[in-house]
Length: 209
Ligand code: ATP
Image 1 (spheres, protein in one colour):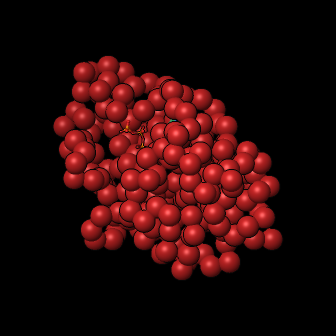
Image 2 (tube, protein in one colour):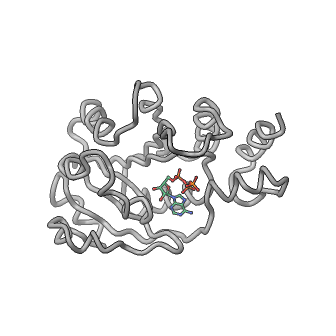
Image 3 (cartoon, rainbow, N blue to C red):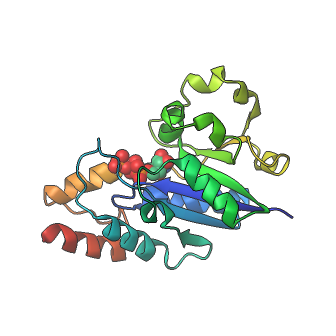
């Protein structure tokens, strides 16, 4: 049977349980063979991160080390120029021909999809798994585009076509964000229970410098 590969892109500045548990939920509930965590290059308009590319990668590696099926993929950081998901998917298609790519994104990220470079082409390259996120609802655009007819909450639909399906997947609701964690760190508050301890130790060292 065709293998389903999850693609989970993000800034991961830093990675936290709000990324990890929903990714595990998706892998188990949808039956993905693996989930590839792909840290992206930080866009120039974002606030300057405290963590370097290398630190973000290192923390993702630490966070996923004990989870079979979770894989770190640093291809966007190895590529020059902006990180366009469409280019990442083309490169993944080259590496995993014969597998079905499933792009995982939180609902907040999915609602911004029309602002992504060549977003309609993305649906010619993969399925999209949209995960529920506290305080996020499906934006209006989803009901207006033609692909709306392919939105489903049944994981089986991903096996029926090679690309272009949108799956709404409910996941554990954890109201955690990287920006909240960065704010806690800069104001000297604890980040315990928001992210794995191994990640927290490294992160607090980075902030202490
Ligand atoms: P920031 O607070 O800096 O904007 P973030 O915590 O939202 O960061 P990102 O790295 O920007 O994290 O997110 C990567 C992906 O993870 C996105 O698809 C986002 O929707 C999803 N995500 C992040 N946090 C959660 C969460 N708590 N629950 C579900 N999905 C999440």
